[in-house]
Amino acid sequence: MTELIVTNFNRNFTGVSATAAGVVRVQAERYDMALSDVALPGCPAPVSRAEARRLSRSPGARPFTIWHVRRNSEMRAALWARDVLRLPIRIVFTSAAQRRHSALPRWLISRMDAVIATTDAAGELVPHLHAVVPHGVDCDGFAPARDRAAAWRATGYPGARGIATIGRIRPEKGTDRFVATMLEVLPRHPDLTALVIGRAAKADAAFLDRLKAQVAGAGLAGRLLFVGEIAPGDLRGLLPALSLIVQLPRYEGYGMVPLEGMACGVPFVAADAGHYAEFSAQGRAGIVTGDAAGAVSGLLDDPARHAAMARAAREVATGHYSVTREADGIGAVYEALWSEGR
Image (cartoon, rainbow, N blue to C red; front, side):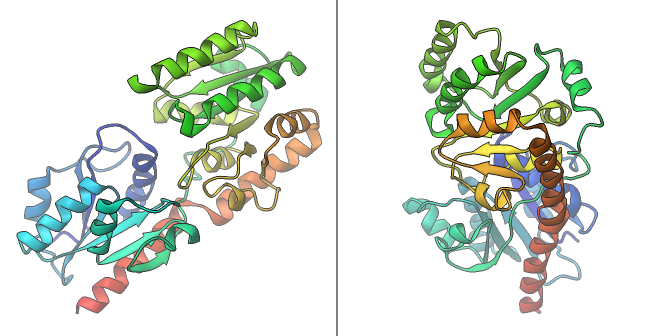
């Protein structure tokens, strides 16, 4: 009697993994459900794909089991279960992309029973749209520090204040933009340390080497640190210690990092990408700008404004972007499908 199967086929912990994990932790308390196939932090132990198919044969009181998928490989597996094995399932796909899908994903998405988009822009690019449900953040797990300065000292990083960008190190994510911004900002703020949190794939190793050489050439290697990936649990401890998050991607489908920072009472400066403009709440919680260096310095030089934005960031996150709110929106789509199937 399994109502819901949530798939996670990527062994790397990505942004998609993080958003799925937050929702699954809420859904595990609401549904008779299973996670398949790769574990997610804080979520029920996963079952194999074969076990997911077996569980789907008995939806119990529901007319069918819903499979909630988020990747191409997961759509393919669900279609095999529904259309080839003829299991009593319906497939829900979440789409965050704000650019046109390539041919294979377009075809796969066209075969879904329902599509949830994370933004209006993403919703315009997909068929079978049932709802626009923004990703949410766990506002209990991500929470402000009682004393930001003390929290920063406890990290062991140098300086009195910290600033960071978080994500895969590659041109699309704008890591080079962050480095260029910090080379301008750090000399103005001798108490500030900047962190690049994330890893580079082998294909981007030369890109990372160039960035490190650029930083070393500016004499800032001790203040602009490439710290690699940080485990999700450890990141929850680090975020509240930061004074500012800076995300400058060339493209972003949605972008959870500013939102996680906001839940921790950390304002952000960002390029106009993803859902950042909406997160900013018209500049109350963050700044979307083409002049990142000016915005960062302006905030760091104005403690009263920074404090007001930190408070607003937490309020916007809890009021509009909680993971519970996301789970509610997704649940409404599930209920509509189940009602149609009776």
